[in-house]
Each structure stands twice: as C-alpha cells, then as structure tokens.
Amino acid sequence: MVIGRIGAENSMPAAQPAVGAGEDAVSRNLKKQIMSQQEKLKELSNNGDISMEEKMKRRQEIQQEIARLNQELRQHQIDVKTKERQERMEQTKQSEQRTGQKEGTEKADTGLSGGSQQALIGADTALKQSRACDTVEISMEGRARVLASEIELDAGRRCTDTTRKREELSDVKERMEDVSAYRSSALSDAEESMENIRRAEEEDRRTKTEEAEEETKDKEN
Image (cartoon, rainbow, N blue to C red; front, top):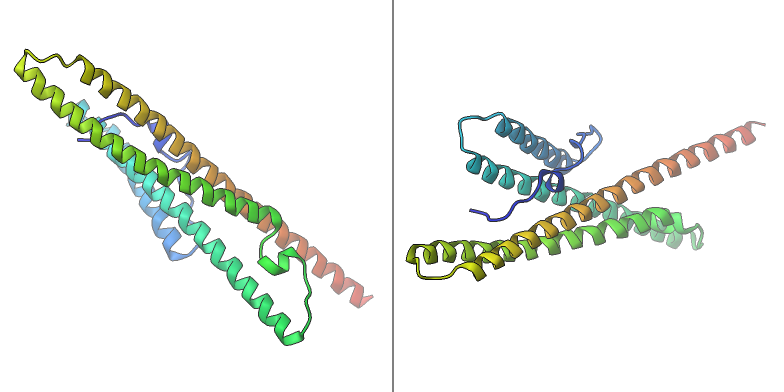
C-alpha cells in the first residue's frame, strides 16, 4: 500500500487531452490512455461498494498513472520536435552543399524560431525536474511503508513508544505532498512550453503564407 496522499488537484491534468487527427500514433495512444484513466476516476467516485480507504488507495494509484502518462506524452512531443529540428538542419546543410551558398536565418538553420527553441529547452528542463521528483517520491514511499510497518509492530508490543516514528512518518507524508505538488508544477510548465511552441509555429506558418502571397502578387504585377 502506498503511504501518503497525493491530491487530485496536483496529479490530474487541467483538462482532458484532445486527440488530434494530425498527431502521430504514439501521441494519440497516450492521450487515449490518459482519458481512459480519467474515466476510471469518475467511475471510482461513483462506486459505493468499496470502503473509503480502498477508494483513496485506488484513486492515488490512478492519479499517479495519469501523471506518468502525461510525463511520457510531453517527453514524446519534445522528442518529435527535436527530431524535426535535426531533420531540417540536415536538409539545410545538404542544400548549402549543393548550391555552395550559405544562406538563411536562424529559422532556416534550425527549423524553429528563437522563441520555439527556448520553449523546447524549457519543456525538456521541466520534464527532467519531473523525473527527478519521481525518484525522490519512490524513495519516500519506501521509507513511509517501512515506518508504517514498524509502527504497527511496535504498537502490538504495547511497551514500545512509537511517538518518534509517528512524527517521522507524518513528516515524510508532508514532504511527499510537497514533491507531488512540485512535480505537478513542472508538468504544467512543460505543457505551457509545448503550447508556446505550437503558437510560435502557427505564427511562423501564417507569416510565411502571407509572404508567399505578397510575392505572388508582386510577380503578377
């Protein structure tokens, strides 16, 4: 049994992820899994056949799975963007080798605007922080289980004072909640960075379209 409460507001995403038709299969599959887990949470809330303790345990497990899937989704999205940037850089390099010219701006060299590159770095950093939180939380959960078990055994002996261990267990639970909140914040930062990339790319496409239309008009005139 996992010890410590992770609040729903910290572990669940702000909204259900929209499954887009233009996304790759991995992203679509991960988003469907997240939505499935969120449906399980709803069903669990309406289930009156299990005890409150069991319900809390299952809720925590589902919330942790949602957090893991969200992290995996964000990492995959960053990997896709990074791969696209590398491919564009290679294409630019090959084009320069063919023409013998060195042309273009930062956008042509990297495939991403300066703002998008910064957002991509920010998202990657946030996900690394989230993974670090996972490691810390696993360690804390192990310590909490040990303490809970020792407290139960000591209580059965009656003559053993469990005050110190109970205080430590309470402290561990509080720190677990802090780590969970920090991980949630890191995932939110990663999500915000990915949204900034999407907006920057849309603006870039819009600008290029307008420039192409202007060029076409100039040629016609």
